[in-house]
Image (tube, rainbow, N blue to C red; front, top):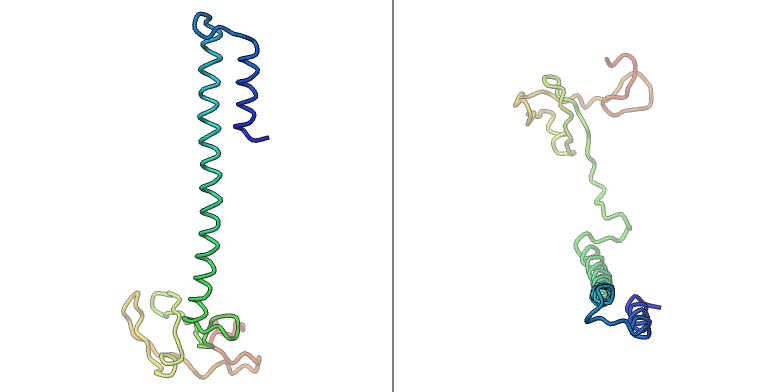
Length: 143
C-alpha cells in the first residue's frame, strides 16, 4: 500500500466518523492534518518518479561514458594504461619526491620544480647485488 493509498484510507475513516470539520476544533485539526498528509504523499510519489527517471539517465550516461573511454583510451588490455614507465626520485636539496618519465631519466639532469635547483640523476642503479636495479633499492648502504 502506497503512502497516498494509506492517506486516502485515513481520509475515508475520518469521513466515516462524521466529524464536523466546520464547527469542531478537533474536526478542523484532523481535516488539516489529512490535507497535509495528502500533499506529502503526492510529493513523495513525484520524488520517487524523479529518482527512477534520474537512475535511468545515470545508467545511460554511464554506458555512454564507457563507450567514450574505450575510444579515448583504446582499452584493449582492460587497464587503459600505455605501459609508460614513471619513476620517483627525491630532490637532494629540498627532499621533495618527484615523478619523472623515461625521457627525463635518460637526460640525466633534472630541475626540481619545488626549489628550482638542478641535480644529476644516478641511473647506474644499485651496485650492492640485491637484484633491485632501480634507484633507491632500500639497502642499508643507501642512507
